[in-house]
Amino acid sequence: MTERPTISGIEPYSFEDMLDILDELDVPGYRAEIVRGGFVLSPWSKGFYHRVMEQVCEQLKPRLPEGHRISCGPFLYVFPGDACAYGPDIHAAHEQVFETESNRLDGEALSFVAELTSPSTRNDDLTGKVEVYAGAGVPVYLILDMQQQEATVYGSPSAKEYQIRIKKPFGEKLPIPDPFGCILDTSEFHRPKKNTRS
Image (cartoon, rainbow, N blue to C red; front, side):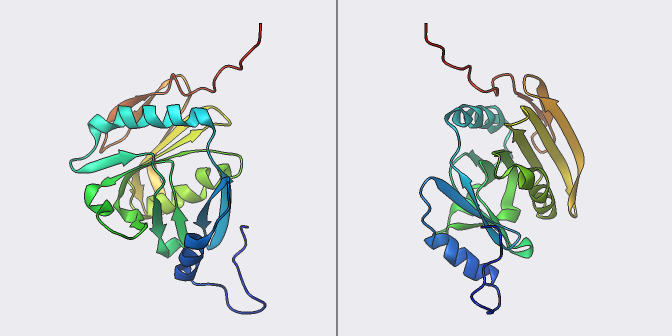
């Protein structure tokens, strides 16, 4: 489902049309995003991702810019210029962004985004989303690579790239750039130990 949808020779849908289709999609067990003009489905997160997401929120909440809120709830942020609509795992934005009845929030209003990778989204999390978030001026983008067990943070966006990039394996402390200017402790981000029966 990554191809741009068409109907027997008719022009591809506009981005607005695709957002309307996204509203109607019903794919149990999956969530959908629009990536570069195509639909991408990814499975729901694994249970232990919740612990990791909560820890990120708890650590960053005291450092949020004034009036901003951080959440790991499912919200859709749109980037019309890139034909993308993402539902980031963790996101922070000014509280005014949420004062709307629309489910399509302005991606340029984000102050922080974090994605926890899955096999189906990992490539775009590591490449395409870096460009989109930088181009939208999102100050900080954090990638928690759950497959490689490492964290990468980007800061100081400029055009389609970030000027700051720092990578650390899980277990180490990761400096988070301004406007947060803090240290993220990743020591509890590892997978849970396998249950063994005695």
